[in-house]
Image (tube, rainbow, N blue to C red; front, side, top):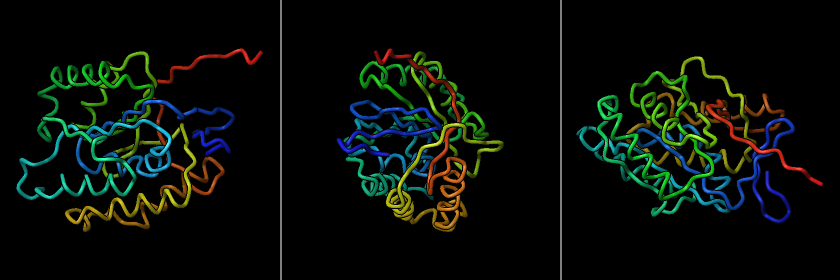
Length: 228
């Protein structure tokens, strides 16, 4: 939700997290992961928030996926993310587990340079080997920082959102439009617009709002403030 002075909040029950003026880091293993997991939230907060979107592999070693790098940039542009806030890492798809130390060091460098206040990455319920590896290393590299896990529907088993973020219908439509930039994947069931919308309707029902995106809580770091 957004206040009259333009500050952006996510709301779960009686808890509010203020994104205004914060640095929010989005981590995905492959092109399309961030958009599938939290494209609506990304569109919602980008105008008022310092975001950085990092995808660890560009999939360019796969001859069938030569277009996905450009499709990812178009998708991010649709969500309002400037190209200079989108980074591709140097890692090779499906063998992240062989590069654990390098991924950890890459994340530590990101931490030092970007200084994130909040991180979104893959759910711990995700069984994809690359997704699982990078989440483990993110939790190591970003100790002391809140980390939330997003759902990539094709590979997250047992996922249930305990952190719900209200988004608008415009955000929902922009997420669907962003995923439509991936001509490469349009025959995949998880790019279906009705499925995308239905997930956000369900998460909205859990939050008792029209639409929401849902995350699992990997780590919450909070402070109690004395309002007096």
